[in-house]
Length: 201
View (tube, rainbow, N blue to C red):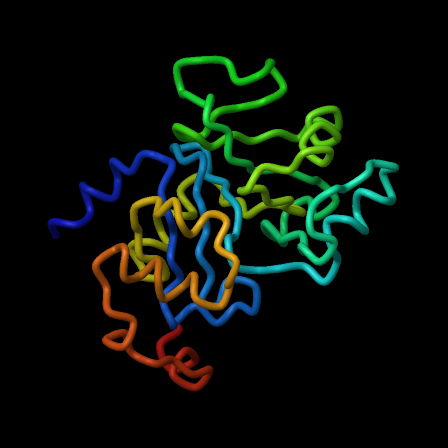
């Protein structure tokens, strides 16, 4: 089949958009920004799963002052290592070929950077950029696992739509990501637990 060799050549970053047949509560209608993908495994962050806790509450526990919107929530990046915090933020100086700030900050895309360093978090909290998201945990796949899921049609692969990375309305991210990938959400089949059970080998 034609799609298979294309999918085998996938290069991160890209978006993974869950199809309706994915009924796992965490990944149902999720959109994952995949940042690493090779034969050893893959990882990324779920863009549309807000956490119950706010950024200010988390930072208060770390004795870091947050000067941004006190109601901004953290997001659950994935079920792996939920105690691990990662910040994605917009940085106009971020370029893949250049070091951003220092070695504790990684450029993901032009204008988008990532850090897990408390010093960086404290600096960003003092003057939050327009685009900033604090993730708890991450989504991870072992060797070959993600490709199996893609070939099973659990995921649609789409381009990174920058306006979705820090979207204020997380409820619209799934449908907007599908549209950016050229898929009309209304054309996807609905899926129920009974349908799923019938299709399991």
